[in-house]
Image 1 (cartoon, rainbow, N blue to C red):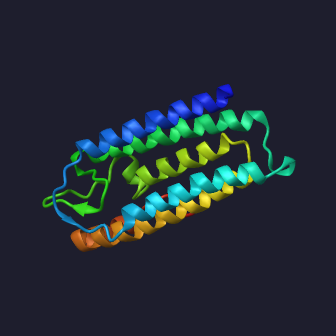
Image 2 (cartoon, rainbow, N blue to C red):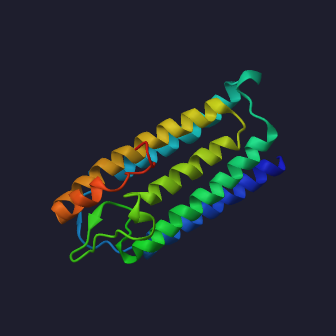
Image 3 (cartoon, one colour):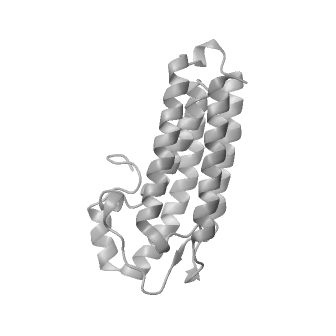
Length: 186
């Protein structure tokens, strides 16, 4: 195992622990409105991980990236996880792993939510793209970016419908002045 592989695996294990901690701290208050989006994210991430690994194995020399790209991937993985958990921290007790609107829940519009409606997904997506980049294969990065973005986009549609129903015109105004997940793109 290379040093890059070891570092990546340790960081992924730490990320899993952080995710489990965030899920265990969340409260299942409010009506579940998830509509399968939890599983869509899981499917997108799972297909991205398996697909990225397969794409890297099949890429050949034309698909290889230089060694520094792998370490850049480590940096992106760390930055993405940090941004995701910063966003989760800003949500505080309003964070849940499944789509739920808690009675009396405020519409959070500060911190990273000032500009992005779903910054925790932005951070997760960047971390996953960074993970694929550690494979030093541009086809792996494309596969991971595509599959994981599909899962997050499905989740965002469900979450935005729930938020629009809960907050009405306030959410519509917020939606007009912020990006979903990726500034200037989505």
